[in-house]
Picture (cartoon, rainbow, N blue to C red):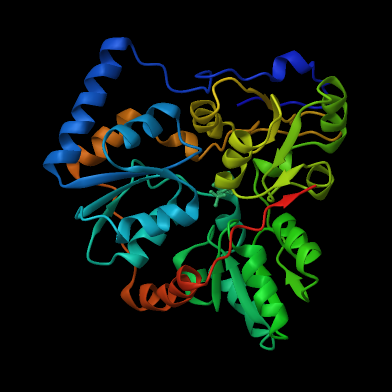
Length: 354
Ligand code: 13P
Ligand code: SF4
């Protein structure tokens, strides 16, 4: 992690080639040993690996090789219920493990580390969030999946970046006013897309908030043919320059489907593993996190996603530790808005294309 302030980025330093995503450095023999041990333990413990696109490439690779999944937060939520394994090993951040447990109470859910938080989740503590809801009882409460189980339990709907626009459009069409939490940038984007009446919580993702619109503008001049792909947790000045705005899955799809040879990508650089795998001949360029007012400490890689490693994954499986435990009353309440989301008749994702 580095600290950058008012640094002008040279475009070439932004190039991220296949396999260059930073990962803990193991010796070859240590990596081979850990990979073999994890595979063996997944078998022995009747466990399956459910990984997010932002975790280190070698964990994504292991999930693929062992019949698990690498997915966005919506598909991670769906996967556990449709898989026969009795244990789900969730490599991501804590709200992802909690969502898996809320939806699969009969299964054991463990994580490589329980310290992997999310700045959005942290920004919405249940007591403050609850009194915000109490003051706005006329509004339908819609929360992003990046929240605690207790916050979900207080919500009418849970959404992810894959379905947020479609679900709030649906609520708006029914004449409902929305209380939205916690991501203010995503909230503003949804509001612009739907015209819904939204009261928006003041939270942000430390990773996406760091993308800078001024240096992005300069970078685009160096790569005039590049398509700009942006996750909607980014600031509005960055979203305004996007060719595609959408969930991690839709950004990966864009790399495979658009004819462009070059892509500037404004999301966590863990996603480059999958993008490179699906489109080997395309050039991927990190959107800049330096520029006027820059205080980037995450620099396009989520510090909490980065806490997942082969080492702590093997250790968690070995000891069956770091189990997600949720109070049953909260779990049952939190399950309702999650089930509503999963049964929402999702048309193809509304990712914006110019
Ligand atoms: P997705 O739902 O698009 O995978 O995003 C999750 C997330 O945490 C983005 O920062
Ligand atoms: Fe949370 Fe941002 Fe990390 Fe996603 S990238 S888990 S929103 S802190």
